[in-house]
Image 1 (tube, rainbow, N blue to C red):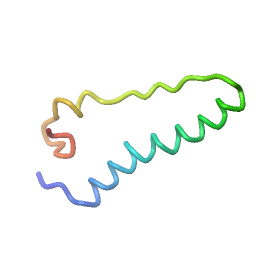
Image 2: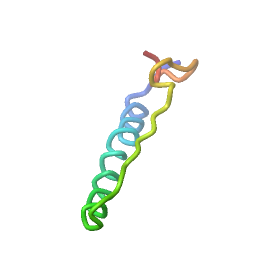
Image 3: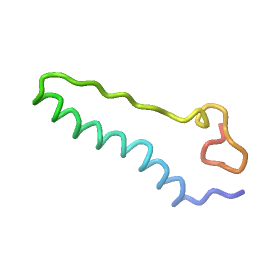
Image 4: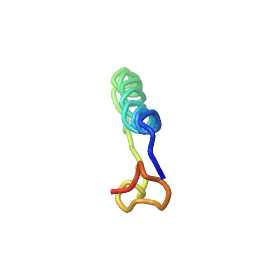
Length: 58
């Protein structure tokens, strides 16, 4: 399986930039409320790798 650069960039944009932008919006609301929590959940595939998913292969 070959991994295209576009696929890797798209995955990174979703997994890293997406969390950043959502967290930034949530922080504004939480600051206004004076409280709140953010819980980020990750895939185990990032640690172990999954067959045919090169972008997750360690």
